[in-house]
Amino acid sequence: MHYSTLGHSGINVSRVCLGTMTWGKQNSQSDANAQIEYALAQGVNFIDTAEMYAVPPTAETYGTTETIIGNWLAANPTRRSEFILASKIAGNGLPYIRGGSDITGESILQAVDDSLARLQTNYIDLYQLHWPNRTSPHFGKHAPGRVNFSQVNSAEQSAQMLDILQALDACVKAGKIRHFGLSDDTPWGINEYIRLSEQHNLTRVTAIQNEFNLLHSKDWPYLIENCVHQQVAYLPWSPLATGALTGKYLNGARPSDSRWNFIQRNGLFRDTEQSNAAVAAYCEVAQKHGLTPAQLALAWCNQVDGVTSTIIGATNLAQLKENINAFELTLSDNVLQDIAEVHKQYPSPF
Image (tube, rainbow, N blue to C red; front, side):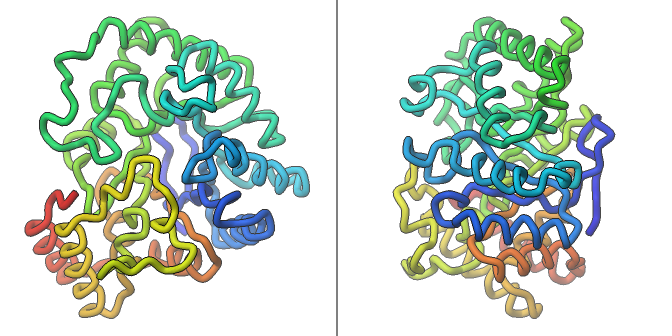
């Protein structure tokens, strides 16, 4: 296993981060236990979760994934130091979580305590904002003109961010969290939090996790360049585009128990004619070079300059083994050239 430094924190994290959002919906406690044990045995020392998991999010499964991790920790109390644990506070829009309201300093304080109780631990290494209060160009909203930035009241957003930052700083000083990060945010969001932290001598943003994969590479180069020079770890989520890049959804296929069989909060916006054509082309590249489509997509993501650790997920151990093994691969120049040719043809397929 290879490791990278998590932003400015000085913490070394594995290049693979174990994502957990299927635990409590597609995976049971015993499944999760087996995944944790296998990942740790392979040298993975980074686990990511969120208060709103399992996914797709529902009122009935809210907090379930954190509870499952907490159950494992309670059964293995001496092993908490073996991994870096990340979690997230849900943003606005889910009526069963704080009435669907914005993230505030007050909600941060309560949500941290609630997550600590479910996780059965006394600290979270990286606590992240799942999405910002303002509408951001994520979850299929990245086409030009889809988000109207000029209508956002930046002073109002900055005031909210300062309130949030002050609460996060209080949690750091109390020892409840060690570092904080962002998710589904933008260069302006990163830099505004940095500006506020410097102006008010508050805790500094350590990481950001955004969707990043062969079908959705919009963060390259501008946001990733920003992360590199601001010492903010870049953590891709959904490197397989919710499984699409494995090829399993081609030609309208819907394998039993796969994610696309469940109702999606934002719809199947990745399921487009262009996306399917791109996936088919990447599958051909993988076959040509003796790789599985998943290995190709994951190894590509891992080799992108500026990527710190890639968040993977699996619904069974066979998938998890294949995914982790992909991070030991080095793609040749010929493979990368073939990938680049497909990417030029389908730069933004959804």
